[in-house]
Length: 336
Image (cartoon, rainbow, N blue to C red; front, side, top):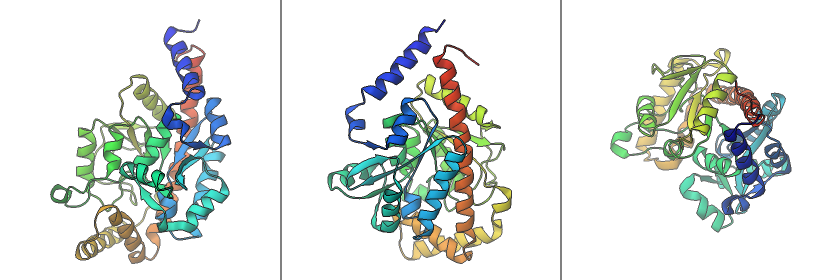
């Protein structure tokens, strides 16, 4: 016999799909993603800033296609998110991916604050973590894969330069799978800020928070998960309890792609000094720093970046599949 809570959950899910909110009606959802959502299949949201601002063309297009392929190979449907000609899109065609890749930095780096402006001016926007979370939540995608999230910048206690990714995690119930926080940032202060926002931070198969290019940051995590099923149960509990917050699941970069810690650290410190000297701040800081670190490491950091994104896509797809199985079980009235 199906429990009342399971029946209500199923009714709510069906209602959201066939009676979308006014906001979701303004979003273009690809047929593949729409069909997957309506059938309760695993879907993984992907950001687009990494395509436009993360690497040059055609490497960005090649990487975007490869990441989507990893998601598909592991049983889920990829939903790359961007704003094209003023229309928020969830799930891009190859032509749309190519358009975004060729635009590169000419596409506006779009966080929560920028969405209305990009849409109103019919512009092209590459979504950051915060904007991707918003659109994923609007259409009912509970999980999102990226490389690394933004955070508190170095000397953020004085500049107040804190990424909107962190506040979004505190207000939008989407789970973010990443290799931790970009290592150019202040990791301890970022974790303190996430705690203040009430965000559950978990590390995958480790007790230590990863540092993007390297496996360890020296910071312990309050929560450890050791399998896709563990992650799925954590996400499911967060959603069922309607806590209203997102969560961060940090996946260490694979050992064979982990860059030399001393080489990366030296490049980061040099890049930070150059950014301060050139007064590069705000949303221009991260693209500059990542590009400069890549130059100083002779391309090693970019190679590591691509490897960790693909690994996150693999883990994220496995989690999405496990989460879809839990939800199907609940709809049938069974509980694990």
